[in-house]
Length: 363
Image 1 (tube, rainbow, N blue to C red):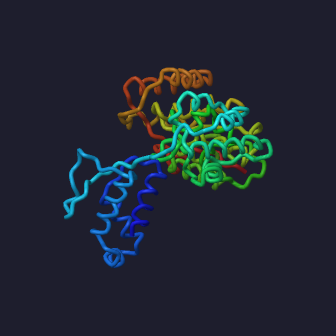
Image 2 (image 1 turned 120 degrees about the horizontal axis):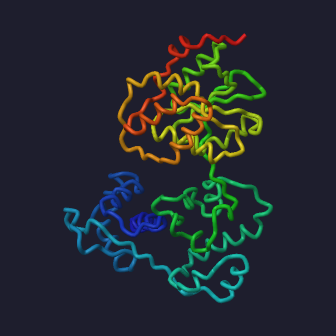
């Protein structure tokens, strides 16, 4: 059972973990031995106890002195340190010089503690990829991570146990970006509905799902939504649209479409619109002001909002656009809501409301 125990600890080590819980480790050992019966037949807890202490004597792990025990006799400490016995300072000048013709090795020259066998192995993999990257296609972060490091999450930010992080990691140490490994960060494709048009010209983006279905149902009946007949209706899913709008080129000629946005009247809704307006400067994007004209009719049903950051620049940009369209009254109401920390969700504009206030039937 010693090999199974060592394998469990080795898995922790490979994940970059520095400590482990003895109870969790025993559970994994039980699982790998095939269950409690097999575990008992292989010596059970007493064998597990001896194997843990053997790994301690071998310098593989060490118990944490400041924690309690697992309440089993003979007792084991609840948490253990994993000894990362990495050989340092072994890189030859020849290796460093060869890699330096493409990579910035200065960090490793300054800090010999980073000169581990595992790090050198991965640096060589990165080096070989960059040498022939011109002939390679762009890939997602997960695809490239799996290809280079046999771990699809290795380069993903914010995942404990992975090497890459925003402020540290192998790419940071080499002064490389994801683009250097021909990695593209793709957003999640938005949900959309097409009314059956091949050449898309008009696109409506709505912030929330209910409004998406209200728009869709209206257009399915060959009705315009307050004067606008969208060929495609996109469910923005809140802030997700800021990234996912890049997929517009997958369903339309981006330089030929007219995009009209309708969201909640609150700081976040206005921020979402302002963000896509600034990010996608090559697209014809503007507010669907006629929908906002209807939404402000529900002023008496205004709600207070919490935890939304007000950005005065966003507010100014939105109000300027509305005023320039000649809708000063709408701008005044939005400003009043903003000052009072009130909001109007777009769900007030229901299918029933649209139907009642839209007499325009498309022939």
